[in-house]
Image (cartoon, rainbow, N blue to C red; front, side, top):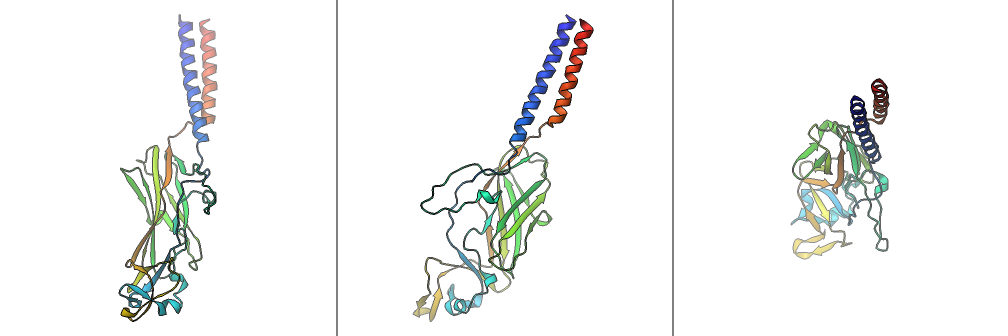
Length: 265
């Protein structure tokens, strides 16, 4: 009877270790930072400038100021203002004749693993203050990272694509599960300057006799501009038992089982 009990005990331990081995292998296979392309985003050309308030008449930008050459460092991007897509190969540019192929593309980390994130922005205003933050959310709780945890690469002109980074410890209460990730850039203009969004669908100036001149149509939205990326999928995986340790434990259990079997035989 003791022999059968020993065999049963050893068999149950072996089964449990096999489960851990399978779980570990599956978890390792799932650690893919990016794969394919994500959800489609539509981007229309935008032209955001930072101009002196004195160059606006009834909220419209004077053509004389624009024609004289708005400083290039005061112009915003013509496409994506900010992106938090995991890798370069997750971004595709499509025309009207190219079908979109939807495939997974997301961030994925183990619980407790350091969070190393990156993205890029084409928003550059030399005299403005830019504050970057990254937000992870599950719809109920949010974790915001800013300050020393984040950084934006310096750029020389609005043509420069600036890299964005985040390097922070994973919060202890960030449990395994599905989340969303978003990067935000809060840009504040210097005193007496405002941001002006030029209507790019109208190529030339509009002359308005009632206002005494010609203007670039658009709208002013004050001295603060918050640029946010599309939401990206963010996954936290549970910790897995390291495979080498599991194999060692499995071998020890087999040896223990054989010794017990020999003792009771």
